[in-house]
Amino acid sequence: MIRILVAYATMSGSTAEVAQVVGEEIAKSGYQVDVLPLSRVKGLEAYDGVVVGGPMIMGWHRAALRFLRQHRKVLQRMPWAAFVVAMSLTQTGETGVENALVTVDDKLPRPPQKEGRLNFRERYARLTNYLRPILQAARPARPASIGVFGGRLEYGRLKWWAVLFAMLIIQAPPGERRNWPAIRAWAAELPTLFGA
Ligand SMILES: Cc1cc2nc3c(=O)[nH]c(=O)nc-3n(C[C@H](O)[C@H](O)[C@H](O)COP(=O)(O)O)c2cc1C
Image (cartoon, rainbow, N blue to C red; front, side, top):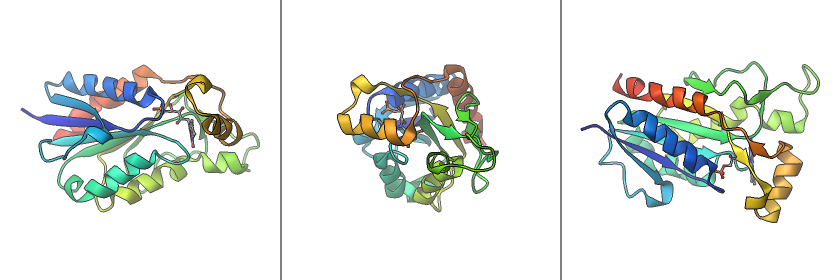
């Protein structure tokens, strides 16, 4: 039986729930799926494909980047995908980076305040700025697909410094922005992409 690993990093739990749903969707194709936090992944040898998920936490979650760097040799030999959970994304017209297949939740991007001139925060929250470090960390392995989805921000679950960062830099209003149909639709494509 084909075995797929969905491994995730999280700070306050919302990415874990996204990973569960991604796993559920892949399992509908008859694959055996393990959904695990990165810290519990012993190795990738037992798997035929991998999905790595992480939130944007001042850049993609460091543990997720480290995981890609650590396993890039193995990932070169198997199909894999990545997903990003975020609260802010600037609408710039960018649709991808370095020819990677990228799917963006269309409810996430926000237009810049002034057309044609991005402020610091808007430049930071560009798609290419989010995704390039992910591709770099995995190189020469290349993902079959990258999904970018809205997340959940709840100040009550965070330490004071995280609240401060979220307020000052991301300036995204707290709340639930996970778009389950978009997440499910992306995950449902993965078995075919992996098969190919
Ligand atoms: C300290 C901190 C930094 C964050 N940095 C970003 C960011 O750079 N860009 C963004 O779009 N969202 C950012 N977010 C929002 C998170 O990506 C979002 O809340 C996500 O759903 C959190 O996932 P988790 O619940 O799995 O930790 C940040 C949130 C926190 C608390």
